[in-house]
Image (cartoon, rainbow, N blue to C red; front, side, top):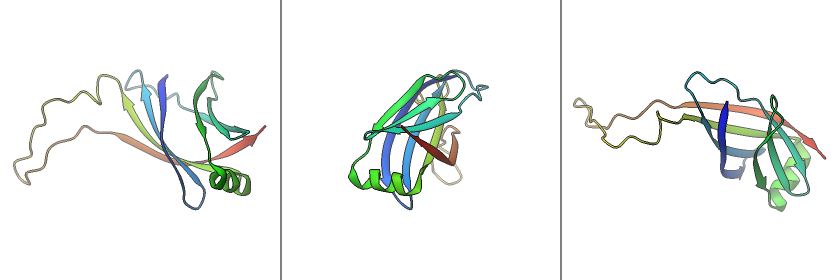
Length: 117
């Protein structure tokens, strides 16, 4: 199950694009089905399974116009799990190339339809 969803950055490329950080409770959680709805100038991300609001984002005039034109938004999601990500204190170097090891993260990119209210 999704613990929290943070909207990082909203950009305007071909369509409106949102960078999301999705924190899951357990590494085996696969329960993230977002629904997008738009009312006024607020884009709302809702859980399709539970119906709860996960996050809200306010759009400016340019982004509002693009969203009305395209009726879709691109989500670039970075999945993270409590206890696995965000708490690495000691970085172990890779001897061969001198770079530090990083924890694995799952990234997801999708285009979702937007329901207008």
